[in-house]
Amino acid sequence: MFINGEWVNAQSGNTREIIDPFNQEVIATATEGNQKDTIEAVHAARHAFDEGTWATTTASERGEIVQELANLIRRDKEELAKLETLDTGKTIEESRADMDDIANVFQYFAGLADKDGGEVIASPIPDSESRIVREPVGVCAQITPWNYPLLQAAWKIAPALAAGNTIVVKPSEITPLTTVKVFELIEEAGLPKGVANLVLGPGNSVGAELSENTDVDLVSFTGGIETGKKIMQAASRNMKKIALELGGKNPNIVFANADFETAVDQALNAVFFHAGQVCSAGARLLVEESIHDSFVEELVKRAKNIRLGNGFNEQTQSGPLISAEHREKVEAYVQIGKDEGAKLVVGGKRPEDPELQHGFFYKPTIFTNCTSNMRIVQEEVFGPVLTVEKFTSVDDVVQKANDTIYGLAGAVWSNDISKAEEVVSRLRIGTVWINDFHPYFAQAPWGGYKQSGIGRELGHTGLEEYTEVKHVFRNKKPQPIGWFN
Ligand code: NAD
Image 1 (tube, rainbow, N blue to C red):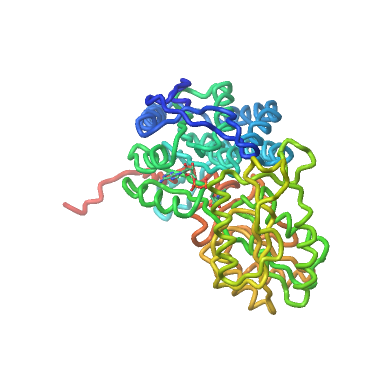
Image 2 (cartoon, protein in one colour):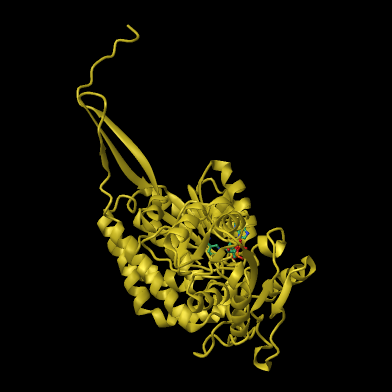
């Protein structure tokens, strides 16, 4: 852990074995912090913020340090990518792409750091000046999940530092490796003591303390909806600001006039990429009735050929699930789908390949005959499981696609752009792709409608989340008012 500029172990001496999900081998032993260590880290961040040197560094200087982090991540890309693949099982190609995205995120926020010069307001009061300035929020706690360990951390660390905050980062206890490595880079980049702190450990002690601690001004969390609710409740203790990036059950809508080959190919990518462990996975496919059967037939044929394997093998298309516990959750959902009457048309079991027996693999799985009222359609499985429903019209598909508590992302496939745009305008979701699936980048905001979250990451909005807005009013000719004479 990195607290107040020092590398430290947990005071309790506790440790946790970090497991490679491909073969269950122990790849590292991490120190396991608890509430006590967290309180120390928060104190360090509080002191560094209140003491003021970081928040009052010029925005250009902060931008330079954040840019230096982008450079260091690019320099160490291969090492970081290998660590991410070891820790998560994702393919090395995916990890390399993640590292490029991460460096781009740091570069983007480095560039934004000194672009907001505030705003002068047209004051309605004579002889006055009115202006808006943005200031850092203060101490920010940043809690991240295991599916994109470093990417999710980067979305938080880069804007928070660019805006002049101090931070305490808590990665998922099962995937801390790349975040630890990036803190080595943070040290190398020369951030002042206490500005960036790292605490490792479980959610119910480290995460809970970060959410409750009244010295924390903002908690930014990416993870599951139930954890999000707990954090929201805990954060109410001192009315801290919250930013929540939660789950999704994302509709992928295919009209009959879409390009068939592209839509099939991308429907597979939408849901089976990273074994479906993607918050924006297109896990809910809605296909126009007239092409439903041929579309499903092609999907099934191709889903059978997806090559599961070791993430370090360049031939592998998809790695394992993250843990034994998570695979059991996915299996339980498949059973629920069967019990609800959905038709299992491919997958629905672990692979038999002897080479995959030590990993947490699960076969790409597709259910047809699905309806909106089924749990398999409504709830986030977070695994390689696709549900397919038919639709008959724009009204029908809009109604079905919006019929969920989530509102994170989704796509519309059609060669009729006005039809696609009509659907897009009626979807209650934060990111919509037309004739594509998955693109996201530092320049555009990311986040959910409804119960998929609160606030946005990335883009201008992602920086604004880490600022307070101050209105400064100056009377140029102060005089007595005489009201109480
Ligand atoms: P999770 O909610 O179990 O854990 C996320 C983090 O919260 C971990 O660091 C965990 O230790 C911590 N945590 C657990 N209990 C806590 C508590 N009581 N207080 C504070 N922190 C606590 O989620 P996960 O299983 O790691 O990740 C999967 C979930 O993340 C999925 O639901 C997925 O959709 C979501 N996700 C969302 C986005 C997005 O951008 N919207 C991105 C990635 C993942």
